[in-house]
Length: 477
Image (cartoon, rainbow, N blue to C red; front, side, top):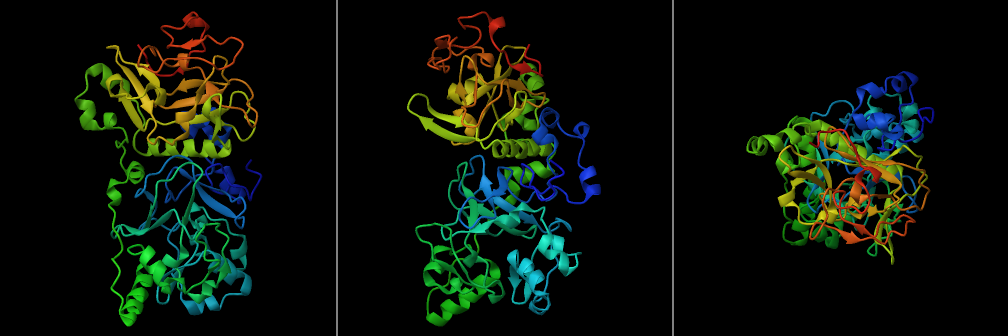
């Protein structure tokens, strides 16, 4: 895939166009064990910026004007940080601040390219792509940015908005409603744009409240001032304050604040021992019985766990996995493109690890292993809308589960999966005991060799050795 110079990787980052940069892509020996198992993951371009939530990937935008957009591939809660640009992120992110006179002096093509990604910081302070810092203006039109946040589009009914987060970040956005897989990250340009250099343009966002035309003066609209109170960029908020004072309207609330140090994915980038699961914190691990602590010891934390979440989103994007519904099986995961036998289909990072006594619904967890004292460890999704909640059982499945040394569960295709096929695995291959309240059920998978019941491998109606037991890379003594 590296010879497709304009192409995006499955993580939304463009492949390097420079041959030397392509040659410097990480080799399989330098990547985690899942990249060694996957042609998709082993060839991903590096994401050097990491300013965008790991569940978000840049992809071609169907309809609505085309181009690229940012799409969510696992659930994100309202108020969760979706974009955070660090003040000290370095040259890959921090663009040189320009004046209006400098921009107006650019050649026409260069000015259009610059203004396409431009945003305003103050009365006469503008930034665009960091990639423009060291390029000649005649090269601007062909630039592909490594910071995928630059592909966030406008909507008159956005899914995120600006907040304040202190001096450590130049800009932060949070989800303004709960987001589910398939949602696009968007914001209303009225909250940040007030410069006629950007021009006006026809809006095709498709929202019921679409204004039809997006202009640099939209911030003046009283209904938008009220709608986005507390979420305007400071330079726009200052103009709104003057406008409202002139009209005798009450002032708006200041920019809402969040604590980015409490954001799990930002902490994963910088804290080697930080993990999302309460069971994985150092304090919790110290209090565990030795057998349980030993099972958890190898689990991915810190930057390793953050990478796994980005890889998981990249796989969902690459394979175009979506949740579908049928009257026979209810909701299920459908492949949107062909997947070869042996290919890694999905990853379930150990974001939330639970012991038997913590599990509320055994249909929403997958068993990772059993500690020496007999206690079972499970991995659960974080949001009820996450795709792994809808993986179906089949007695003749098309994937098998591999449990990694990092406590990640991976689904590997055991046969070719065609576009339109349901992705399935055999629940008895991972679960020891599903009797009674533990998630067992009468099976109606329709396979020729359907066993009729799914009760866990200890109680299956066929010998254990006949089951496609998960490939286990950790101790399950």
